[in-house]
Image (cartoon, rainbow, N blue to C red; front, side, top):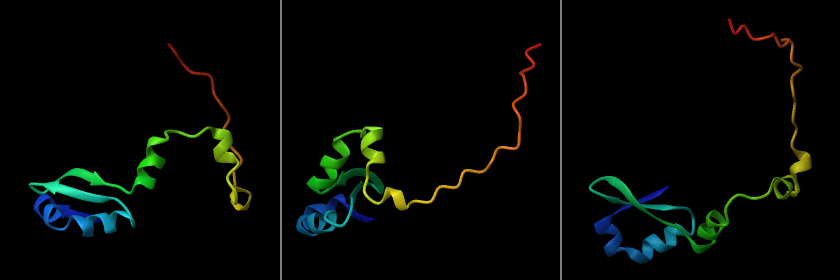
Length: 82
C-alpha cells in the first residue's frame, strides 16, 4: 500500500501513477485518507460490479481447491417460543 500526502501527490504525480500500477495509492489530507488513485484496469474491474455465481464457479483452477465440509453432529431442535 502506497500513501502520499496531498502535497507529495502534487509534487510527485508521476511517481504516484507508477505506484498505482502496483496497487492502490492513498492520498491523505491532514493525515486522513481522502482519495485513492487506481490503475484504469483496477478501476474497471471494480466498476464492473458483482459477477454471476456461474462465472465465479467456472474460474480456471477452481477444481484444484480442496473443500472439506465437516459432518454436522448437532440436531436441529424446535424453537421454544413461549
